[in-house]
Image (cartoon, rainbow, N blue to C red; front, side, top):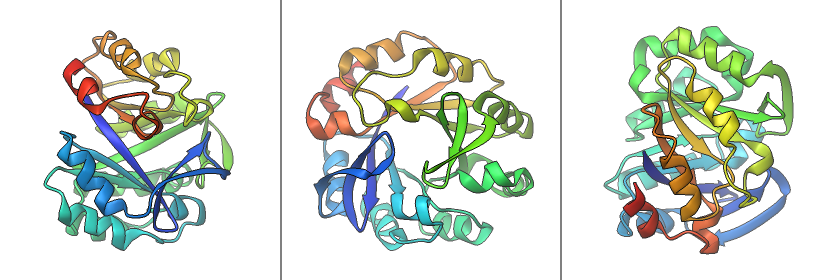
Length: 239
């Protein structure tokens, strides 16, 4: 299990949302590229970068910043948010992004991800963002009628390798991870799962590590790092 610092970008700045709500924003930095350098210098092995404007609006608002991050740091970067075409996936991979995270388009069009997996299986992930067990989309402002576990099973059957599981009700709350929901997702096929949402401190990292699941690839943490309730160095030691 690896620790993956999150850099969420809105209007070109580093921010965090509370439970994915765009009217509850905290700004943590004006330069996402410098933030990426900072986490790399502290020992991060991987970075999770989200274009919040793109996720909500379906348009690339911060893509050039994300490309600069990939070209600046020496560690791999995964990114998501508003990536809804084959051309966008190819553009990001060609720019040095290690893994592209898909969301809304997958919920609406399974054939889309099926086609992409034929070309870039190892470089794709799907974001499984759930509220009360159902998948949310379009920057979490809409909830579909699709159960998260059903989507996870479908994606596993397609051969998807990576999935990012987030309990929206915990994201940005420092309330601790959704262990029960995570266990259910970890039991689906051979998916490599990245846990996200609610991480508060090193005890949460130890709790996830204690699951001893070969399918738990990593954990994304954002607010805990920015608020100082979790030390990246301490978290890295645990893992």
